[in-house]
Amino acid sequence: MSKKWITLTAVAAISLLSLTACTDNTKVKEAFEQSLSKQNEMKSYTFEGSTTLSISDGLLKTSNPLTNGLVSLVKESTMDWKGISNVDPLEFQTDLKITPKGSTSPFEIPILIKDSKLYFNMPALNKTPDEFYAVDLQQMSQNSKSALTLDTLKNTSQLSTALGNLVFNGIDPKWYKEDKAPVKLKDGSSAKSISVELTSKNEKDINTIFQTKLPEFYGYLQNNGFLSADKAELLKKGQPSAIQLKAPSKMVVAIDDSGFIREQTFDIAFQMTVDGKVQDNHIVLHQTYDAINKATPVTKEVPKNVKNFDDILKLIAPAKK
Image 1 (cartoon, one colour):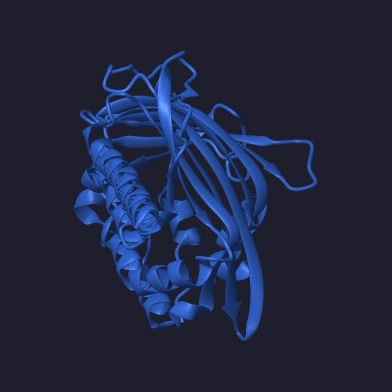
Image 2: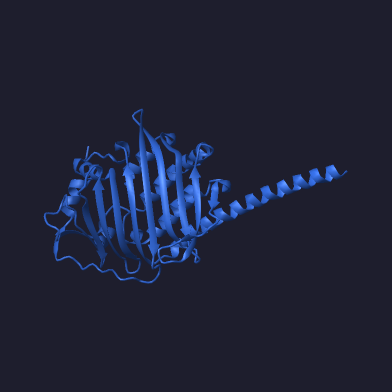
């Protein structure tokens, strides 16, 4: 009898542990999803980040020679940035530094959005460092066929939340993990760290989920002006299995006591099959957010030496067949 009760007790304990683990993982996933929604409340913040890209031609290649020339500078590169973002009124500034693979000479692209105008200097296009191109975002919102408008630029956090929920919602809670020890943020405060890893054990299941979400993912990008209608349609018509996430890959976020994501890291490997050829891609990205909702003013001044960007847009526009 005693052995029977010992056996039953052991089974009950194991079952309880399994149930608790499941419940804890579900709570971890819920905490992550809540942090994604919380990002919608970010109306102003400072940010800093970097990425290392190894992108195949199949992902970025276009029919336009000038665009391809610009893309070739970044597809194998390291990028660093730092800036300020405010939603209302829309103000944004950053200094983007790009170092092509094998180069020791990075080039910088300063960007400013202020008074409904986008200003930027690109060494490949501008003759001098003080010469900037300007895009009238208000005019573009009224006259352009593109969905990229002032309102969509203001709603980038909502787009990020929507895309994040789209990709991560279907993942089984058991693949979510929270570190036991909190992480320290740059300002000295602590945050909980939540991660999702793509491994040989879950690669197939996560790819199945990811591929079913791709058409909707492309639709979000198109509707918010970050993907042209013809490019979105082309991608939607392609086989979802042509894109395969590969292990090992990982996503990690640090969530502060207020529920905001303060740090995020993505280390993503994936393959694309283009014209029957498999092409490897790898993206490593790290970004931090600080001074959330503290209305940090932009510090860059509106450039004095400004040229209209319309002529360049005509060159970058897809070639007509």
